[in-house]
Length: 111
Length: 114
Image 1 (cartoon, rainbow over the protein chains, first blue to last red):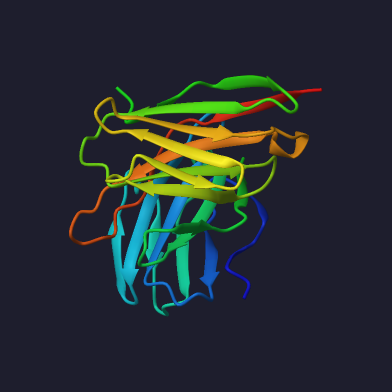
Image 2 (cartoon, rainbow over the protein chains, first blue to last red):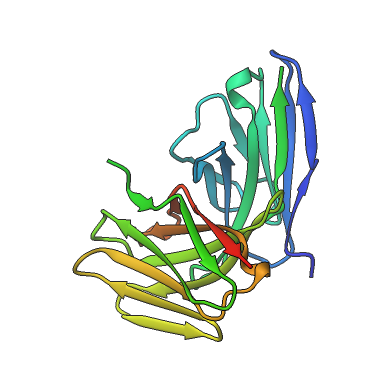
C-alpha cells in the first residue's frame, strides 16, 4: 500500500511552458485535493475532486486545470507557467472519516 | 484576518513537554487537525479531533479543544530531537457535499534544545 504518490519530485520550467503533475492513490478514496505551499505559508487549496469525473475550484485556482479521469489519479496542469507558480505542490486524498493524507510533494521552479 | 493562526516558533528543552497553540475563527469548523512536516518532506497526519470532543490522547500527544474560545492545542510529552519539525494546525467544515479542503495555519517551528 503506497498511499499517495506524486510524479515528478522536482521540475524546472521556463515561463510559458506547460506541464502536468500526477497524483496517484491506492486507498480507493473518493476525495482528492491539490494544494500549494509557499515559504512561510500554510498550504492553500487549488482544486479538488469528489469523485471520478468531477472537479471543483479551491481557494487559488487561477492558472491551473485539473482532471480526474480515473478514481485513483488526479492530474494538475499548468498550461502556461509563470514565476508566481514556483511552489511546492502537494496532493492529498481523504477517507470518509475526514482523515486527509498527503503525498511527498513536487517542487516546481519557474524561471 | 486569517482563518487559522499559530505562533511561528516554539523552543523547548529535550525531555520537557511542548505545547503548540492554534486559534481559528470559523465557528462552523467541524474537524481540527495537527500535521507534522519535516524538512523537505510531505505532511504527516498526527491526530485530529471532531468538534464535539474536548480532548483526545494518543500516546505522547494530547489535543485539547476549547470550542468557546476557538482554541486548539497540541501537547507533546517528553519532547525528543525527532520531534523537531513544523507543526500545522488545520480545520475543515462539513458542508453537506463533504468535500471541503483544509484551511491551514502558517505552521509552528518546534525547536528542541539539548
